[in-house]
Image (cartoon, rainbow, N blue to C red):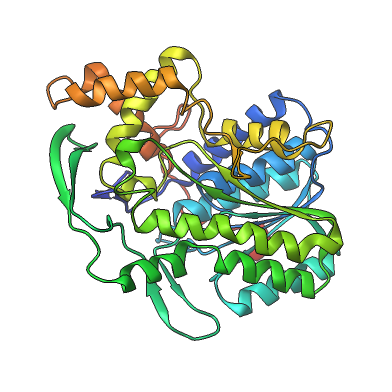
Length: 400
């Protein structure tokens, strides 16, 4: 099959297995180039392991610390004549490369919010690893069926209290326009978003894992969050998503109390703004990221997901003195280079003057667009996109 990108808005409807394989190989090579992570994890569970920060976390653990990894994700498998999702191809590539390197790697494909998948994961840990010493929670989903109540919750991207008007960009066309986003109509929008994207499911996972006895003494768990600059606060940090992120961060206290007898610790890592399937859907954010990329690349501080995860593991979670540096609210900050004063001043200056006409000059919209297609395995150096490609790729551990 000749596979080309087909898009609809902020979604790419196709994915390229060879592109995914090359992307994973590139990330593995980066991790290997940085050397081994001192005191790194050895048995790792990654929940939401197939794209973005999740797959990068799995690669960092496996190839930076020789860790055995179990990945949980919900992706559409490929079959003859039918493409799989990008996350499916990423996971197939990761397992293939991990097994080549002699590393344990198995995966579970299903709804991570469900009790059934939690139990399946526990059974696999008990059978193969005994216990895990790191749990990464990196789920990103627009909806969740609550495992206890059966109620289906859908998240919304809305401001709270008042409409929000600001600039946004269509990264396909480069058109900069104003957009107005209506606020939530009732508290249900907020509570549903918190139910999907907040910390309850992370707590459920940790409770179930602990009760099953599969958490090692000294276990660490980390979930991912974002803060960003004030210009995105109305749609992000002060909006419905921000309420969910607040709930996620509050969950740390509950999980820390639960892990006390295991000498375990929970963390939230505030990560940098990057092009992900989730961030592409948020109005205003793609324009901010395009301006941010320009400023950070010029200063030599730009990072992708794999650079962020390498720094998280090597310089935050697993330092040689085992002292995890935190901000005044107890959070890990690897958005520190993004939020540097000189970077934010440059972004703010260009935000005020950006238009369709000067977009390519004062932003890195081309870098944003390329990163978007890279998510789906396209526009990767070294891949021949005119070549007939086998679309039916198996994830080895779940091929049957």
